Image 1: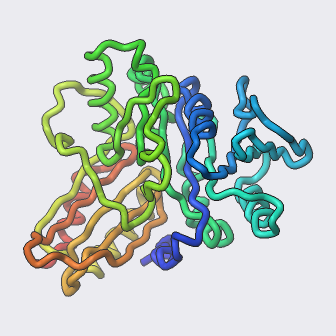
Image 2: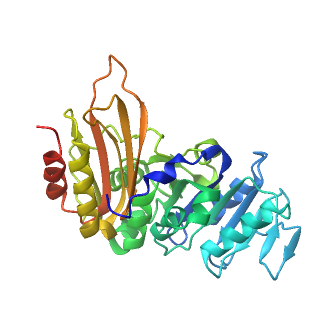
Image 3: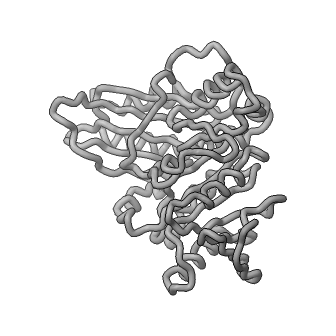
Length: 338
């Protein structure tokens, strides 16, 4: 497997790491409204917030104190905010150092990206930087989607397609401005782009907090959920650059051939492979193999044992930009034990 393989990072104890949520969404989708809701919720946790832009309306409306030199603010509910203008790795390392020294007290981190940001590089930080990987756990990517303008934005802006493709949770905002048919059309399109992300309504920032925090969407041990109607015929066609497809098989993989194929395919198409994840049935193992990747970074770990009455099978989902579906499916098929 190429150097991009990060399976060794899965041996960390997730209970000892600070969980991090990446909050993304296109301009005006309602990220800050949702973030304010999370910060005001009585969940009993202290949250460090990292923002990478100065917005017209920040989250520090009710701040108690501010260190202007460090851009650290403390909210009235005990949350901390850090506005990022420098390097994300440096900021996160400094935050953890201050936490370890007892200068700051927080249990989790929320990173709010800019409206035009691709969340991919932010997510990759947790796998390519050793110091960040040793102290933080990427919990999930949450994407807020403006239901009223989503169809037009998806047509015109690649960034929102990337944000949807990376998501572990999709939150539909401004649904009060839409009728039932419009909401259904947006939902159908989002599922076609990303069938593995759970989708919730989020009017005025109201969202199920317990479905947003501690969901371990980037944890290999999380369940691989794919929308049950994903493979049903879709009568509405869209020319989205970001799309998804599923590979399924009841035959076991030859582990060596699978690793060689994924290593080779990621070198060619890695930049366009946003998220891919699967539960693998491999020859000679009585356990499920849990596998996932982000661009050219990929990792695997042993899951639970197959149950005696359970049908062993592989299920993988790929989300990416104009990926050659048939090439992927045929290549994976050739990796199966004959």
